[in-house]
Amino acid sequence: MDLFIEDEHYFGVDLGNSGIRLVELKLIHDKPTLVTYGDIELPFGLMSSDAPADQARVSEVLKKLVADARVSTKNVVAGLPASKVFASVVKLPKMADNEIAHTIRFQADKYIPMPLDQVKLDFFRITQDKEAEEIEVLLVATPTSVANKYLNIFQQAGLELMALDINAIAQSRSMVPNADIDVVVVEFASLTTDMGLISAGVPGLIRSVNVGAKSLIRVTSQNLGLDEAQAEQFVRKFGLTQTKLEGQVYRSMKPLLDNVVEEIKRSMEFFYQSNPGRKVEKVVITGGPASIPEMPVYLANALGLPVEMGNPWQKISYATEFTDRLSGMALSYSTAVGLALRNMV
Picture 1 (cartoon, helix red, strand yellow):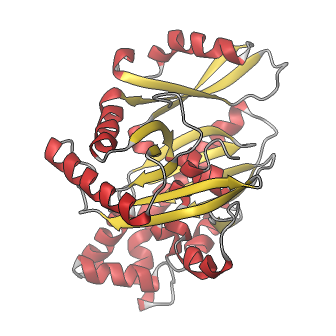
Picture 2 (cartoon, rainbow, N blue to C red):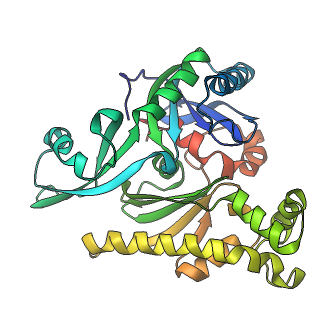
């Protein structure tokens, strides 16, 4: 969702519920190269608040991070989680790309549950066959109030918000190879699990489920009679291993994770109905809970698909001495890297 004409150089910022992450890249010899990166914690829930005082606090934290990381530009591309976006697949008659933008505005009110003068719209062409008599377009929209909130936060931090991207699309940019394959990207965030079905590099579906790290910890706390700090330690240590603690942690989290699995399955089925012959080849997972013991194995068995941990640094050039450090932070930097890669890959 472009707000202004983009400058050729910017950095990516991921504003999360529990922290902020940024990545700055530059093209050097046609290769995206790491210039700087950084992260900083946010008081949980601060980013969810619409109060002006809380937005000002987020701006101050962001300003400090940018200074500490020594970012060389004030131009920013920021990400929006799927929970802040309305997304729907729209069918249109065959037309050129430059006609879609005009046509989509007359169709959007059928799919967006808000007055169109209160949202910002964008779209992605799903159907790549130029000769198809009917095409599918992914229509996405975010409330203008959300866009204005982000704009306000960055302006108060002394930065220029050049565009808003969607986290799932940014993640696919950083973690999915440039190939004609279908991949489901799943991000386990603090409050939600967001997913995007990426078909040959183009977003086909975007979904969000109200299951996140906090709910997994909370249900473990309740079932095992632990405080949440202890429950978090148990989740991180034992995860979905059924042989540890008699499988109590596994059984606590399983119903919530089954909801995630079912939503992934429904999303794939919906996509296949309109795209016969396509096939999801793998699932790429990211976010903190992706590192829970046995999570990839659990999802692979439940979905019948290969599941791999995302690596957002795979397309980035950086000094070899950073390899271990960056690898250890891979699951938390997928969005920020993907935002910084916009228009580079």
